Length: 173
Image (tube, rainbow, N blue to C red):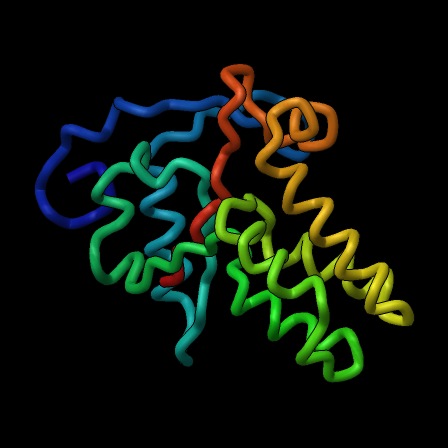
Protein backbone atom coordinates (compact mmCIF):
# COMPACT_ATOMS: atom_id res chain seq x y z
CA UNK A 1 0.00 0.00 0.00
CA UNK A 2 2.99 2.32 0.14
CA UNK A 3 2.57 3.91 3.55
CA UNK A 4 3.80 0.90 5.48
CA UNK A 5 0.83 0.44 7.75
CA UNK A 6 -0.74 -2.44 5.84
CA UNK A 7 -4.20 -0.91 5.66
CA UNK A 8 -4.31 -0.40 1.88
CA UNK A 9 -4.58 3.37 2.30
CA UNK A 10 -2.04 5.13 0.10
CA UNK A 11 -3.20 8.67 0.92
CA UNK A 12 -0.20 9.37 3.16
CA UNK A 13 2.42 8.37 0.62
CA UNK A 14 3.21 11.85 -0.64
CA UNK A 15 2.07 13.99 2.27
CA UNK A 16 4.23 15.28 5.10
CA UNK A 17 7.61 15.30 3.36
CA UNK A 18 10.57 16.75 5.24
CA UNK A 19 14.21 17.10 4.33
CA UNK A 20 16.84 15.81 6.72
CA UNK A 21 20.61 15.71 6.43
CA UNK A 22 22.35 12.34 6.19
CA UNK A 23 25.82 11.55 7.62
CA UNK A 24 27.51 13.36 4.71
CA UNK A 25 25.34 16.45 5.09
CA UNK A 26 23.35 15.67 1.94
CA UNK A 27 19.66 16.46 2.07
CA UNK A 28 17.41 13.39 2.05
CA UNK A 29 13.64 13.20 1.86
CA UNK A 30 11.85 11.91 4.96
CA UNK A 31 8.28 10.79 4.34
CA UNK A 32 5.58 9.42 6.59
CA UNK A 33 5.90 6.15 4.68
CA UNK A 34 9.61 5.98 5.45
CA UNK A 35 9.02 6.76 9.11
CA UNK A 36 6.29 4.09 9.39
CA UNK A 37 8.50 1.51 7.69
CA UNK A 38 11.35 2.41 10.05
CA UNK A 39 9.12 2.08 13.13
CA UNK A 40 7.67 -1.23 11.91
CA UNK A 41 11.17 -2.51 11.19
CA UNK A 42 12.25 -1.68 14.73
CA UNK A 43 9.30 -3.55 16.18
CA UNK A 44 9.80 -6.66 14.08
CA UNK A 45 13.60 -6.92 14.15
CA UNK A 46 13.97 -8.10 17.73
CA UNK A 47 13.06 -11.53 19.10
CA UNK A 48 12.48 -10.18 22.61
CA UNK A 49 10.09 -7.49 23.67
CA UNK A 50 11.53 -4.00 23.45
CA UNK A 51 10.41 -0.57 24.53
CA UNK A 52 10.88 2.30 22.13
CA UNK A 53 10.21 5.84 23.26
CA UNK A 54 9.18 8.55 20.84
CA UNK A 55 8.58 12.11 22.00
CA UNK A 56 6.76 15.01 20.43
CA UNK A 57 5.75 18.54 21.30
CA UNK A 58 2.78 18.37 18.93
CA UNK A 59 0.87 15.09 19.20
CA UNK A 60 -2.06 16.69 17.37
CA UNK A 61 0.11 17.08 14.26
CA UNK A 62 1.04 13.39 14.06
CA UNK A 63 -0.67 11.20 11.50
CA UNK A 64 -3.05 8.65 13.00
CA UNK A 65 -1.22 5.87 11.11
CA UNK A 66 1.77 6.54 13.38
CA UNK A 67 -0.33 6.57 16.55
CA UNK A 68 -2.42 3.45 15.95
CA UNK A 69 -2.32 0.48 18.35
CA UNK A 70 0.55 -1.81 17.57
CA UNK A 71 2.80 1.13 16.79
CA UNK A 72 2.16 3.29 19.80
CA UNK A 73 0.65 1.17 22.51
CA UNK A 74 0.93 3.67 25.34
CA UNK A 75 0.70 7.45 25.38
CA UNK A 76 2.05 9.19 28.47
CA UNK A 77 1.75 12.92 29.10
CA UNK A 78 4.64 14.25 31.12
CA UNK A 79 3.03 17.24 32.76
CA UNK A 80 4.37 20.04 34.87
CA UNK A 81 5.43 19.37 38.44
CA UNK A 82 2.52 19.19 40.87
CA UNK A 83 2.77 19.98 44.56
CA UNK A 84 2.55 16.29 45.47
CA UNK A 85 5.44 15.56 43.10
CA UNK A 86 7.40 18.43 44.65
CA UNK A 87 6.87 16.92 48.11
CA UNK A 88 8.22 13.57 46.92
CA UNK A 89 11.22 15.22 45.28
CA UNK A 90 11.90 17.28 48.41
CA UNK A 91 11.73 14.14 50.55
CA UNK A 92 14.15 12.34 48.24
CA UNK A 93 16.66 15.14 47.72
CA UNK A 94 16.45 17.14 50.94
CA UNK A 95 17.25 14.55 53.63
CA UNK A 96 13.71 13.25 54.09
CA UNK A 97 12.09 16.70 54.35
CA UNK A 98 8.36 16.41 55.07
CA UNK A 99 7.59 19.70 56.86
CA UNK A 100 8.76 23.24 56.15
CA UNK A 101 7.27 26.73 56.61
CA UNK A 102 7.42 27.38 52.82
CA UNK A 103 5.36 24.31 51.87
CA UNK A 104 2.01 26.08 52.25
CA UNK A 105 3.12 28.90 49.94
CA UNK A 106 4.65 26.36 47.54
CA UNK A 107 1.36 24.46 47.37
CA UNK A 108 -0.39 27.58 46.05
CA UNK A 109 2.47 28.53 43.72
CA UNK A 110 2.83 25.04 42.22
CA UNK A 111 -0.85 24.96 41.25
CA UNK A 112 -0.17 27.68 38.66
CA UNK A 113 3.51 26.99 38.02
CA UNK A 114 4.85 25.70 34.74
CA UNK A 115 7.92 23.86 36.00
CA UNK A 116 8.90 20.39 34.90
CA UNK A 117 9.79 17.82 37.55
CA UNK A 118 13.32 17.78 36.11
CA UNK A 119 13.76 21.53 36.62
CA UNK A 120 12.53 21.25 40.21
CA UNK A 121 14.83 18.29 40.86
CA UNK A 122 17.76 20.27 39.45
CA UNK A 123 17.14 23.09 41.94
CA UNK A 124 16.77 20.68 44.82
CA UNK A 125 19.91 18.72 43.95
CA UNK A 126 21.93 21.90 43.48
CA UNK A 127 20.86 23.04 46.98
CA UNK A 128 20.56 19.66 48.73
CA UNK A 129 22.77 20.79 51.65
CA UNK A 130 20.53 23.79 52.34
CA UNK A 131 16.81 22.84 52.28
CA UNK A 132 15.73 26.41 53.11
CA UNK A 133 17.56 27.80 50.08
CA UNK A 134 16.36 24.92 47.89
CA UNK A 135 12.70 25.62 48.67
CA UNK A 136 13.19 29.39 48.34
CA UNK A 137 14.62 28.84 44.86
CA UNK A 138 11.81 26.47 43.86
CA UNK A 139 9.29 29.06 45.07
CA UNK A 140 11.05 31.80 43.09
CA UNK A 141 11.12 29.59 39.97
CA UNK A 142 7.42 28.73 40.41
CA UNK A 143 6.48 32.40 40.67
CA UNK A 144 8.75 33.24 37.75
CA UNK A 145 7.11 30.58 35.58
CA UNK A 146 3.78 32.39 35.73
CA UNK A 147 5.25 35.86 35.27
CA UNK A 148 5.50 36.54 31.54
CA UNK A 149 8.41 38.99 31.73
CA UNK A 150 10.44 36.62 33.87
CA UNK A 151 9.70 33.60 31.63
CA UNK A 152 10.66 35.43 28.45
CA UNK A 153 14.08 36.20 29.88
CA UNK A 154 14.82 32.74 31.23
CA UNK A 155 12.83 30.14 29.30
CA UNK A 156 14.03 29.10 25.84
CA UNK A 157 10.74 27.23 25.26
CA UNK A 158 8.82 30.51 25.30
CA UNK A 159 6.97 31.17 22.05
CA UNK A 160 6.62 34.51 20.28
CA UNK A 161 3.00 34.76 21.42
CA UNK A 162 3.98 34.50 25.07
CA UNK A 163 2.47 31.06 25.51
CA UNK A 164 4.71 28.39 26.91
CA UNK A 165 5.06 25.19 24.95
CA UNK A 166 3.97 22.21 27.04
CA UNK A 167 6.50 19.52 27.80
CA UNK A 168 6.47 16.83 25.14
CA UNK A 169 4.41 13.71 25.81
CA UNK A 170 6.23 10.42 25.59
CA UNK A 171 4.82 7.87 23.20
CA UNK A 172 5.79 4.33 24.11
CA UNK A 173 5.55 1.49 21.65
